[in-house]
Length: 442
Ligand code: GUN
Ligand code: ZN
Image 1: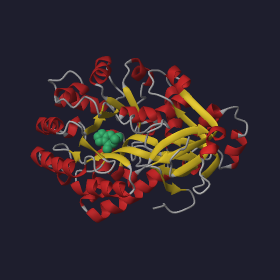
Image 2: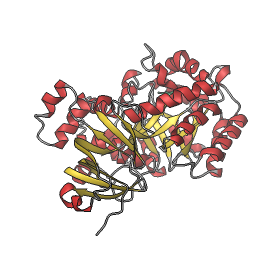
Image 3: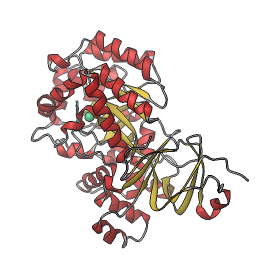
Image 4: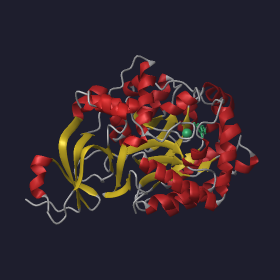
């Protein structure tokens, strides 16, 4: 037998075989090769083997990338993030609604300027790669220029990224308000320009119910009908004052999610950020429509929004991904985000095991975004988006990791002590796109 490949990478391999329905199933589906070999052809996984089994297929002319001492993981999937908010991480003192009006809207107003948008877009994509995130679902701003800047950069890096222009036509400052008709037209043009360019996807992006008139949500409904393979992203039930405001604004609908459901915004490829204060009926509707939620622990803690109920999410079998939600979220690091998710679990007596946490950050996130046929693990045929993690880059990490009894303990310690310093290489579509202590490659 011969394996036709353009790159081979040696290292410890950890991934989850298949999409799972429970944390126990994840633990059973997790697989680990202490000394493994990935063969990559045309950007995809051509074979995954132990070193012992795979060594014979290596072509001495081609050689291989030796990452022994590192754990290779599928690239992280960030299910919810705002690129224009990169510069405002750590804005003091406010909860959601005041945080938006005091800090967020003024920052977002700058993205009408394409040069500014391009500068931040480049910085943002570099941050994703250096933190090991290979796929993200991203909010831009109201301005089409902000989408063009981000997706131009993501296309250059060959990333599987989904993004969209924020739509809002009320309860925002004049400088950030549009009409429903204008929002419809601009979004339509952006979909036609970007959907399926390279590995990109377009997400129709109404900011949330309070900044939407019925006309705007109806325009979103029409766009979904015209472009059924696009994604949709918005916010849902994040903060108690926000939920009360939605109830005031939309008295004809019993609950927050009913507003979106009425305009057919629920469904496959719909991703609702937060979902903290949901009623059982809303969980059921998310399940029935095949919608997904994004759990954003650092944001939920930073804005004091509340605790995401992971057990309820499992019980109702709702698809879920992890979001950093920068800039309400406080880090690009999925490792740190998983550490905070664990603490949110602890406050509800839920034990988030490492296998489950890394599932949500990889294959589970891909499943939430309906990309699990393309990314999320090392299955043969999947796109080769992966990262190399050095589990011990500080004296404390070395002391602690040396005492770990298996890879699960090491991964758990990485959730607790790890961050972007542990990410050594990031590969996109079969090519090394970023390496530590070097400027971005390519
Ligand atoms: N709800 C509406 N807009 C936003 C936003 O930008 N960030 C967060 N965390 N929640 C929102
Ligand atoms: Zn958000």
